[in-house]
Structure formats: C-alpha cells, structure tokens
Length: 166
Image (cartoon, rainbow, N blue to C red; front, top):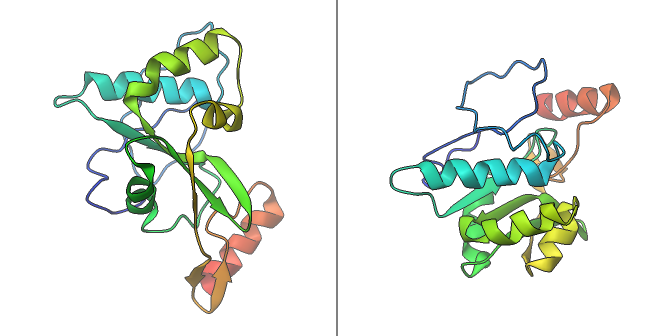
C-alpha cells in the first residue's frame, strides 16, 4: 500500500473475485449492472464513491493490482503534473493508462463514454487529453525495476519475489 499525505482515503473497486488482501479498504458501490466490469466502470464507481464523501473527494487515483512495484511518489508526481486535469503514468516509452489521477469532475464525460460503449482506458485518456507523466525505474535491493512491471503469470510472480529478495 502506498503511504503519502494524499492517500488519506483508500477504496477499492473490484469485481467479486476470491482474492485475499493484506488489508481491507472499503469497497465502492459497484457500477450499474448494465456496464461491463472493466476499469472504466470501476472508475465510475470510484467517482460516485468520491462524490458521497464529506468533504467530497476532488480526484481519484487508479492503479492496477498486478503492479507490485508502484513508486512511493506516484500520487505526488501525477498530481504535480496534472494541472487540475487527468494524468496517466508512463515508463520505458509506454503509457500505463490504468495508473492515473482522475478529477471527479470528469464523471459526465466518463458516463457519456461508457454509454457510447467506449471501454478503453487509453482511448478515454486521449479523449480527455490526460497528461502523460514519465516515471524512472525504481531501485529495489540491488535491482533497477520498471515501476509498472506486471505480474500476470506464475513466472512473473516468481520474478517479482526474486526482485523483492534481491
């Protein structure tokens, strides 16, 4: 879990899966059933949760659950570059649109995109002209690692364990 002053509230929007988390953040109300359970629908659920908070949350940060090496300064850097708009992460010349900072004021645009059956986070980020924020490698032990390394397979998970033990 990230620790930063901007992380005062942590919430998860997840499909129902049998995963065990080492912590129990609250779960945002799931998106309406007529929407596919994809990252953009999760973002809509996060926006709705943010709007119900007192005081309301102005922006949410989304991350992939399969990226174990997120940089400690992720939120601060996205926020610093966002210029009050959306910001998405990049590394090694590739964008990682699921990792981003999203102003809740974008909810109407997101709702329209979803009603038009737009599903791609990358295309939504382009539509709203999200700023791309490059991140350097992070140092873990003696290794330099892409902060957005994806652990999608058993082999990836084993590599992540090796990196953490280095």
